[in-house]
Length: 351
Image (tube, rainbow, N blue to C red; front, top):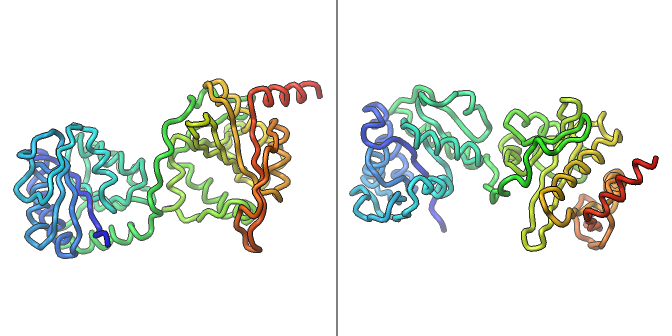
C-alpha cells in the first residue's frame, strides 16, 4: 500500500525567518509522527529543518534537487533525486505529494504556490506571503493560516488531511488552449477562458437536474475546481456568462472533442448553444485542426437539434454505452468537418 506523502514548500536559508523555521520543524515532526513521507526541494532553509524533524520522528524524505549533484541534498534526505531541471523541477514537486504545505519564501515559493492553486492541489498556506494577494487563496482547494502557531502543527495536518479527502483526484491537465480567446466571437456571443470567479456558474449548472440528467458531475466546490484550465471556455452573451464549453484534443487523429452546457435555464432554446459551438468550431478550424467530434445521448433531443444546426453529422451509434438511473442507453457519435460548417452557415444565410 502506498504511504501518503506531503510536499513541503518554503524558502532556502536566508529567505525564511526564525518563526517560520520553528513552525517548519513542528510541522515536519508531525508529518513524521503520522508515518507520512515528505517531498521537498532537498536544500537548506525550510526544507532542511522540516526534513530533520520528520526523520527524527521516524519519517522518510525525498529531495528533488535542481541540479545533477547528489551532494546538494541535505543530511536528512532519505532519497535524493537529481532532476537537472532547475526551476522546472517545481512541477514534479507539485504533483509528488498527496497535499502541499507552503511556508514563508520568496519568488520560487510564490511560483510553486501559484502552480498548486492553478492545478487544484490540496494546499495549506502558512503565514502571510508578502508577494501574494490573499484573495488568490480563497478557493475550495486551499486553506490559509495567516498567523500560524507552532502548537497548531497537529491542527494544520488535520486540515490538510480533510482537504485531501474532500478534493477530487487530480486529473491529467488537458493542455494549452488551441486558440486565443479574442479570436472566438460572433456578434454578442464570445468565448473566454474560465477563471476562479466562474465557480458560481458551474455550481448553478450542476445543481440543475436537467443538466445532471445528461452530465452527472458533483456540484461540490472542490470538485468543480477541476474546470479551471485553459481548455474550458465560458460562453458570454452580451457580457453575461450563460454556459461553458470544455474540450480535449486527440492529437493522433487531429480531432477536437467538446462538451457544452448552457447553464441558465432561461437561456436555453435561444440558439446560444448553436452560436457558441459555431464560434468554437470556426476557431478550431482556423487554428488548423481537421475535425470536431462529440458524443451525445441518443435521447437528448435539444442537444441533437443544436448539433444539427451547426452542421454535425451522425456517423455512428454506440449501443448501451451511457449509464443512467434506468439502465444503460445508446449514444450517438457525431462529427463536423470544415465543409460541413460552411454548408450549415450558407443554409442559415439563405433563410
